[in-house]
Length: 171
Picture 1 (tube, rainbow, N blue to C red):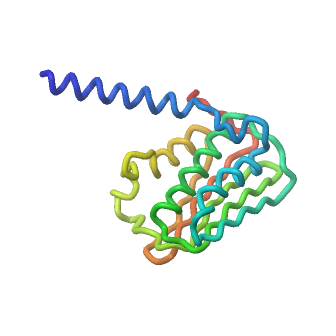
Picture 2: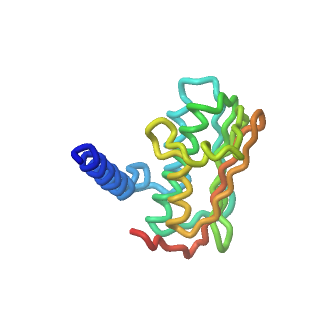
């Protein structure tokens, strides 16, 4: 009985911690546009490595709702950290494209990739992080379309398409 109560208390605490972390606004976004914030995020991740980090932006930049920018920032952060920790990539590209009706974020690496058909890769929390599950949850919260393309030896592409008018219905 005590073990079950402890387990339930731990699960409740973890859920509350995740809600708190999700509610924090990234400091890079406080006074900068999304693209600038993403570049400031990406640079130090790969600064002391041999990995080439390339950031590009296409289209006329516009502001998105702050909750959308927050989620896109966190998705990019997780994708970049995964590329840094696991991909063994020599190049990572972060692309942000502003189209009239939607914004497209893409993080692409030329690393080792992984077996996307293996369900463990969908559900793992990447050794304590939020991982791919968190990326999917964030995309869902803003009504975005998430695509992950990967295969062993083929690198990984994480792409998120979000409508310019999307809203976060779960905050």
